[in-house]
Image 1 (cartoon, rainbow, N blue to C red):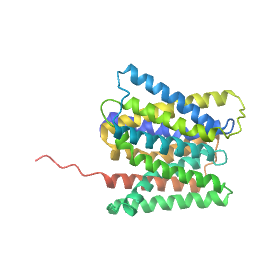
Image 2 (image 1 turned 90 degrees about the vertical axis):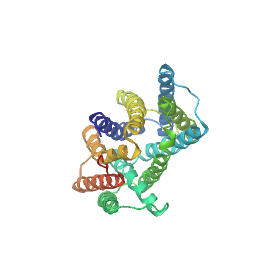
Image 3 (image 1 turned 120 degrees about the vertical axis):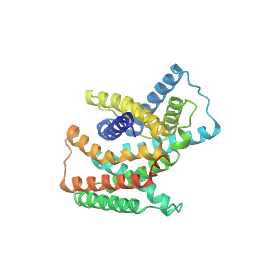
Length: 293
């Protein structure tokens, strides 16, 4: 893995993790699903304009369309939609921690459902990840954390895992990265319009809300997605996913710094255990490089 790939991975992890903090600001002052649908509409339109400026074709193969629609529904509509609703009552740090367990869910699904072999390091990492979640959730639930919000975050993480499984096809080559990014965002916006129609559209305007919406639209919403697709194309999905081990660390740190969310000892211990577990699972998936003959 070269230096550019490492920097891209770090940038992606920081942007991805910061989305929970900006989302928390948005959902406390605006209808969550409507705000997210608007964000996707803007980000998707910008991505397609960039694709047009780059000379990309908006024509995708049937396989790309199928995977792009699935990705738009699973990640954008379900994963982010459920998280936006959940963060009305759940702290940004907890939502980030639960979402970061996605690689663990993928590893478990591969072993339990698809019969994939899980190396010893992967099994240890999976166990560590579960232990970290138990540590954090034990402390949070005893402190009165909203169970319904937690349940929504868990379902959202499962949807993100499903989206990740479709990522390879959705990022299909042909130089259409920006087109795919834009299309899957517009799919998410279209799906979210249905539940958005039933929301109470009351907004509490403020500069914090404006800046949070602008940031989440351009940085986690557009820039992070583009960086992720380019990173996958550069080093592959398995190696790129290794950077997910930084998400719980960054997510908790950013929420504490910008929102003043409490840092509990159990949170710090659990986050480090989860991060180590995710790293072990991802490293176990990498094939050793054969020396030249």
